[in-house]
Length: 137
Ligand code: GCU
Image 1 (cartoon, rainbow, N blue to C red):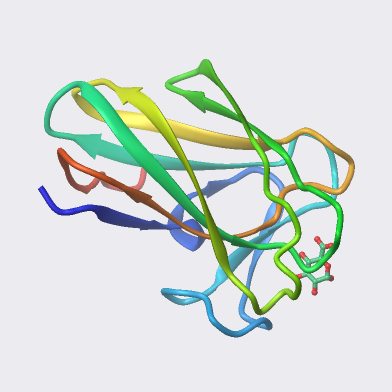
Image 2: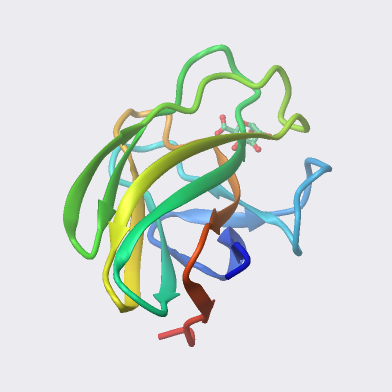
């Protein structure tokens, strides 16, 4: 199956705002995480079958300081992701990670682990067996 895009602006946002003030994003905007520990963006990804898939997060970080997040899949910790500076808030780069998805709906959560919050989050692209965007809960 073709990779599917999951725009951050349609994900579940705990603390953050959908913004459009830095060009180059896909969809209708990006998520600016609040600059606090614990702010998260959670994507719902519907997989046709269980298995390992590659997650590709597109982001911008206009600072020189990493904006790491912890990753969880269906509530289970799945490591951390580093989002180093991209040089400008309008320069978007990608970070990838392989995870195991269950068949059906999967909750993929990225949670800021520093007081700077996460990076500006554009979208999550999921490889492989993913079917379609699950309905918004
Ligand atoms: C700036 C920038 C935001 C960014 C924020 C941050 O305000 O315009 O897009 O999210 O810095 O440091 O998180």
